[in-house]
Image 1 (cartoon, rainbow, N blue to C red):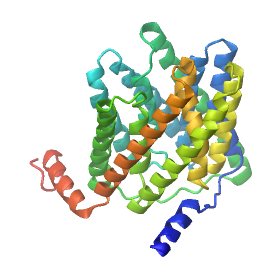
Image 2 (image 1 turned 90 degrees about the horizontal axis):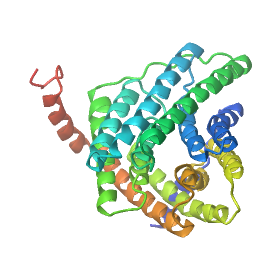
Image 3 (image 1 turned 135 degrees about the vertical axis):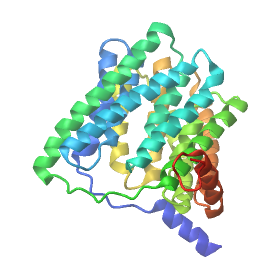
Image 4 (image 1 turned 60 degrees about the horizontal axis):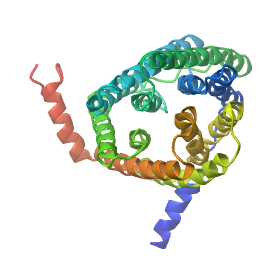
Length: 357
């Protein structure tokens, strides 16, 4: 037991090496922070935060040639906007929220798996849809919010273009990586299982009447996308521990006399720190991810909940989502479960061996 606990601790605190150029966290912070400063300048912090959500598109920038990376990023910008807009369809029809999120998760995960997209994969698309589904705005305000997400995504594309030129000038054009093998199981079977568990997690959050249910499927997806069951287990521990410590950071932030400009500066600084740490030590990065995501989703609403209630809601959401995500990862990496799920899906999927077609 002592040896096992020692191994778990070493996995939890291990610091990874990173080859990221220093310009990457700076560019990511600009893509996320500039829309908030623009919103603060016009007295529209909520729209600025929506634009910051679109700015997360920058994090999907692949390490490929300029033409490919810009085409992929523009496709991601469209996907981010579409995901947020589709999520907002659940405003007037709450019964559709779970099916909509399952459908969005399935589609974006299929695309990311088919094209072997690197992390964060489908995470931010699903997060945009979930936040949109529970956004309090309606009518023209909803259209303005979708427009802000679109403009934030387009700004991220422009920043990515300038960043790519800078990196190419310093480090040269990246050599194309060999194409990854894709097949029915990693693309279709895994996408269906991931979408099912994301829908299950949101359904559980609604059944428990959680105050911020959209964080449950996001936490679930962040865990279930692990490359292995060991990776999913470690990430679940890191995310839960980092969230608990991050809530203390948020409590300290909530005591400050925040205005629109200080929120913009704070979120830009948090993004810079996160992008520097996330590839090195996820648990430490999660300490800063927690206050960032709380501000992203709630600062535009004037922090409708008291900080203590907001912290409690986020901790419960994270733990519930992480546990369901771990259960989903166990299914994904179970040969027996994959064989049964694959056999059933092949009978429904045209043109696959063993299907009816």
